[in-house]
Image (cartoon, rainbow, N blue to C red; front, side):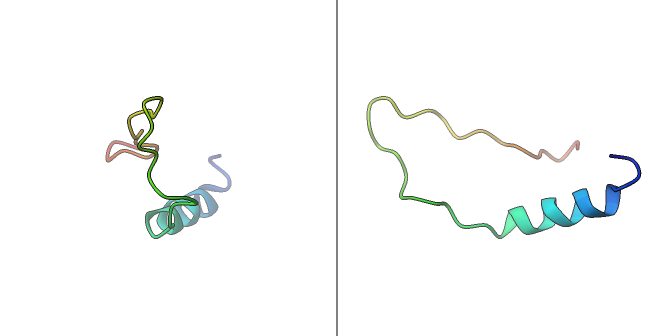
Length: 41
C-alpha cells in the first residue's frame, strides 16, 4: 500500500462521488450505513 499510495488516494477520491447501486433499504432488516473511509484515514 505504501508503494501505491497515490492509487489508493485516487480510489478514495472517486468514492466520494459514487452513486448508490440501489435505492435505500427501508426494510426491517436494513443495516445502518457504515463509513468506509473516515476523516482519520
